[in-house]
Length: 239
Ligand SMILES: C[S@@+](CC[C@H](N)C(=O)[O-])C[C@H]1O[C@@H](n2cnc3c(N)ncnc32)[C@H](O)[C@@H]1O
Image (cartoon, rainbow, N blue to C red; front, side, top):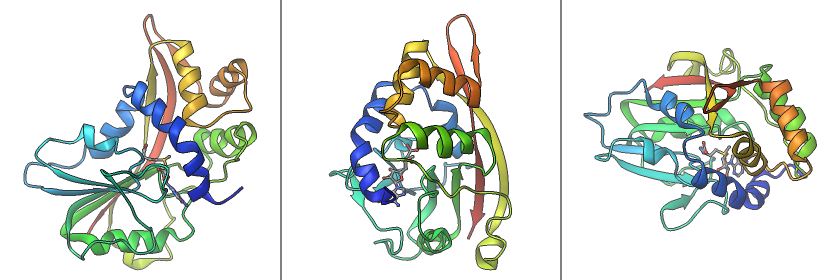
């Protein structure tokens, strides 16, 4: 199956359950995304695609955060269903737009980035982080998850030169960095359950999931927590 709108409709419940029950796991990933901005003079923020609106909980309270997703599986009164081809917002509406791990299934990434730039105010920022091509995360998603999720997984991942052929986007990149940080768990059982639900690993037993994580991503165990290596390439654009 390669219709990711339908895939996420099916996967949304389990994904959301994992995020609701283990909100600490991706703490570093969300904080990394927002760490380069000073929010004190900002008001309007767009999170796209937001999944269940998780980023909002990491942002200062004074901000007005608009959470949006491309899949009906995640949308409700607080999360608006939008299309990546044409965003339903006026030009120059947002101080900053964030996109976390949501672009590698899009048919036309440059078109989506142009739309994000359109709705950002002049001097505002688009910050997005996604999987970097040829990393262990790429292998984990496009090989391991692809094998053990019955809906499959084929992402088109990113690299530093991704926007070279799109000067209007390339010229606005002010930072491009690969950031590494862990997913953090309280126990081995929590780690296996989170991975099973978050990545939809319905065809894998607990021991296969453990081995996949250990062999492909790598695990560090301390006395009271387990850390799994993770990392994303992050682009910061200024309009
Ligand atoms: C890995 S989740 C990331 C969600 C959230 N930003 C987070 O970090 O938890 C990917 C999101 O992208 C949306 N998405 C990406 N590509 C899509 C597509 N082609 N069709 C529908 N939804 C898509 C999904 O609905 C899902 O919410």
